[in-house]
Image 1 (cartoon, helix red, strand yellow):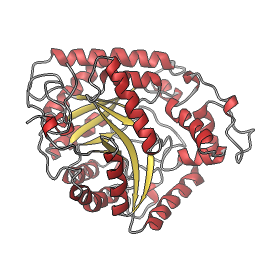
Image 2 (image 1 turned 90 degrees about the vertical axis):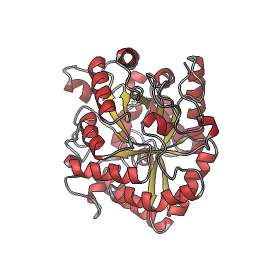
Image 3 (image 1 turned 180 degrees about the vertical axis):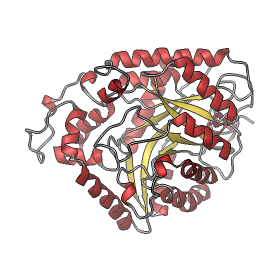
Image 4 (image 1 turned 60 degrees about the horizontal axis):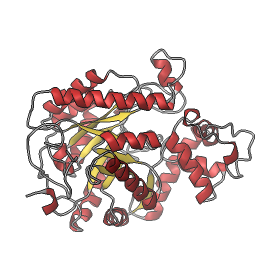
Amino acid sequence: MTADDRQRLMHLSLNLSGVGRHTAAWTHPASVPGAELDVDHFVQVARVAEEGLFDAVFLADSPALTPGERGVPHRFEPLTLLTAIAVATGRIGLIGTVSTTYNDPLTVADRARSLHTLSAGRAAINAVASAGDRIAANFGLAAQPSHGERYARAEAFLTAVEERWAQAPPTGQGRPLIVQAGGSSRGRDLAARHADVVYAGGYGIDDALALDADIRARAVRQGRAARSLRVLPGVIPYLADTTAEAHRLADRLDAVQRGVIDPIAWLGPVVGADLTGHDPDGPLPTEALPTDPDKLSGASLAGLARTLGEREGLTVRGIAERLHAGGFGNIQTHVHGTADEIAGRLIAWFRRGVDGFNLLLPLQPSGVERFVAEVVPLLQRAGVYRTGYEAETLAGHLGLTAGDAGDTGDAVLAGPTPGRAS
């Protein structure tokens, strides 16, 4: 049976993040003290996600500390932690972030291949063209490489990684998969050439579908099939017994966070302009904003700030608080409500063409446990989500063939569409 013979099903990825995706999650009574450096905690959350039949768990990373901006001064290196999770789980995929700017591609290729073999075909790397002067300083540089230099490096990096994997002896499990999340034009081109999965930012279904269409069009121009990759928009679900209670949870966490960092002071560097002289309750001065991506700390975030000002008429304060809410640099859709409401929202998006979602639960493990217990059964009842794993590998969960992922092995095991075109 081929993927086209099977019913289209929703894909879910979980962002693992210690006490939760929200920066103020540590203040919640359900938080677990010391979770960021507790291997057993991460294993527990991954097991809950596996009970919920998620395609994968995902670990983000930034190879530098950011004093005053994040509440967590230490974190595990992703591929190392995923190795521990691999031996404690049996089916769920394992996605770890690596910097293409500050790593050696052959070393990363071998480490990822090792994790892939140890996990019996469940590994992927999330390739990030790391930006920021703090990261650059951590590697002995006075300033970050330019936007163009970072993406040229990322292109050469992923090409070298793919060549290394192609030279490895066949295992029957395919190669590790490649995930990419760059929102700039260069980032989208990189994803179109190399990615099996794209993590998408933005607010709302229209943003998600527009990015999805753009990535697939770029993939076609690269000689790939339009449906040879999965695009998963990020969603931050606030789940509670009532919609009002869900909003109160989000508001309480956001208020704690605003008390630590002024979101207006934070927004200026993001959009590449000094906003201190502007009325915080006035419009974003778009005429003063640079368009050169080298002057922006995050091209996707800066573009979204412009969009929020122009499309929704938000003030400087409103834009800062919207982007700031739920964690610094958030460009994901926030949904609030009961299990029925959140499931309904995800199903509606899925039926309009979204492949699935990268879920960033504000609280962990409690938020993950509740999502699996309450939302997953509703998705299954609606017929849009698996009731059991049919595949052994991450490629199989996603409906990509092992052959398309690097060597011969299992046929298409799940999903509605074929994998990467040969």
